[in-house]
Length: 69
Image (cartoon, rainbow, N blue to C red; front, side):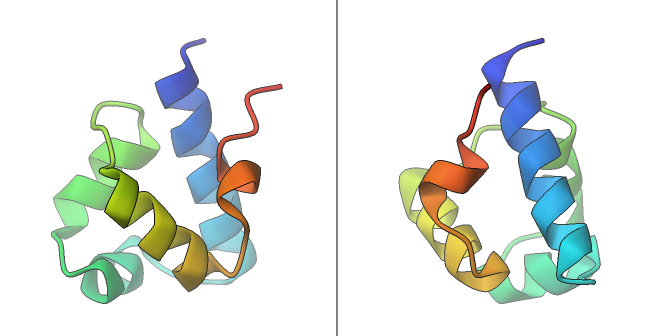
């Protein structure tokens, strides 16, 4: 499994733990629902800025999202 897929799985895990929908995250990040969906499926890269914003939204550290173990 690629690191991009693992990143997407980690994002989904933390998003669901916060009981947020993909559309909620998309609104907070000022992007589309489709973008978040593709990120979680490992089909789209996040910019560094969006990665840090997403970590803040999910109330986790960036290192937690990028835990590839």
